[in-house]
Image: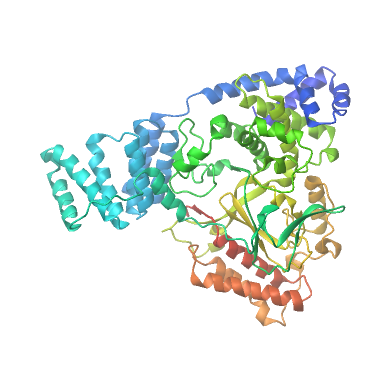
Length: 620
């Protein structure tokens, strides 16, 4: 059942029994999240309403989700696309086949996908899939095909010894099969002879894991910090420090002048989740785009970029079967806050949660990998209505019940989930990658900008980034590398000045009244940034620098950058530097706001995204 409908039913039942007024009064006296959870668990009407939906959900979770027939159907579809040379569509079908496959269907899908990667000259992914197909028990009478393909890949990568061994295995398999493969045997023998004399040398990179390590090395990594790491704030450089003020609360300020383009924070998510629509194209664990995911052993709902990530995602053993259920029931809506809360609790574990409850404050080191930093994020509990807290408490009990085999929620875990359901709407961060066409697919000349744009693929808990306050005219930008976010300056930041992010409501896009209303509704504060105090106009109404042709050309450079090849053309870095130069010039010589300033900032941000993790997609 959809959670909204479930909660509506609970409210109706409470109305019918005449409990609403008296219950609201008693619930309002709860002074802690632990008391709120105890209250819900002691309310018979709520527990009764939850019984049937929980029972049905558990039945759905326990139902078999792997299907040989469905896997074979997807594989047949992939074969059809492959014959038509529609390689990316073939890979997409094989990916679906793998997610639902098991046994022989799994190994056949790996083998077929390896053929497509081979034809696309993606030698490493082809090798990885060949090895996984062999590990899963690929039929012996067909193995010679994989060994020959394996030899081709090793040869292309310059590993002559490995190519020799693979071709020899193919030759032996063909020889044992008799005369039916005589022509193929001749071809393999020819390949071996062309390799010449090969010495028996022991080489690394032979199993799936070592091949995957080579694939991971080719990813775009987050940049280095501009200075040494801050020992009290390990995700930030020494250019940044954490302070606490009466009017701004905890915030990050510059310890020195920071130039535009500088990287001052690089933070890996404490926990992250992938939006449902990207489960076939992105890693469930690290959120990187992957052309060839490997499936979960048990469920058909998630894929991983590698067996390495699959092994690291130990928390998935506890949530296996829950992910799709959360999305379907509406628990994962609004930024998937419910799912992110559950993921955080599962990754943390009960013992560490108990420890965090007992600690009065965070230590001197504000470490992103410490659950204590997540535990103490502001949830604005005192500003929430009784109805809001009641709804979140019911959701926390429902979510925690789904995690327990007997539907009896652990109160410690339920309390932790409730705490996160309050803090994450104000503190969770989007993971956004630049969506670009797949390699080898062309962009239509009439819509280049629609095909290359930022898209939200997930959300994450980033405790250090949560310390950055809002401005409608921010001085930093977030750049995503999988589940890692780098913070880069997009304005000059003077020593002692606060780092300022934008929470989704920018003066160039939204009117002041709309910004103020939405920010207060979600984040419970009134913005008094410069753009609000001076009531800056939106971009469309802002003046242009018609008398400064050296600066007014920024929009043309921005459009040119949007046309840049996503694999990193030489002119992209030159365009980025021109944006930095324009911004520097305008900060000292131009009264803001002006359109050219926005153009230069957007161009620079696009360059940052172009240099970070890309999410490939098919272009029709």
